[in-house]
Length: 267
Image 1: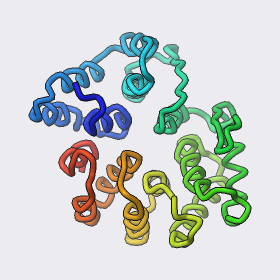
Image 2: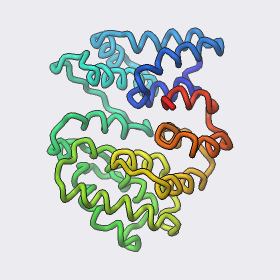
Image 3: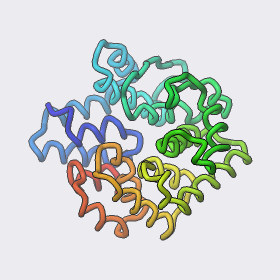
């Protein structure tokens, strides 16, 4: 069973970004490729009870194998198939997509949840999402004050996590200003490492569209060799821009190919 390929990667990490009506198509697609064991495993995860899911999460295993079960837990909560008293505790140490887990923790909670959810900042110190957001929303216009180009992708990621709980109009206004800054200054050297995925999630959250956002995404997505970190951005771009972005994506070595991407994106 191939749990290291693009099918399982997109399923396990982005389960809650895949439209519900696409899971059956994804299972059939996987079976058609001869990966019947993987198809059955994914179907088992989707159909498991919340109690089975929690048992699987608590079972000793590599954290990459736990990701799908953790996301299945949040899917059950999203579909209102889990009791509100069935809490979850799991600590990721190295998964690069843990920000998606944190975003799902924030969804449906009050804004003050941002004070309680901790993360390790770029320097490795523990801090809250709100503290980091407020600090960097003051500094991003002063790139000389930031020691690393990655701070811009980092701030984008913080906003991706926090956005579902943002209710403060002043903070939302600052987030909109930051998004406009990224678009207007995307050619500047200090934005050369800006993540196209984090940008695309930000644009979708803010309901930004149009040719300007499309061109900004095209520019960001073509700057560096594509990798798995770009996958969610591709999904959202294809979903939001359709034919306008399909040609570009078809020219990229998209992991798993365009057909898989179309399935999981719902395009």
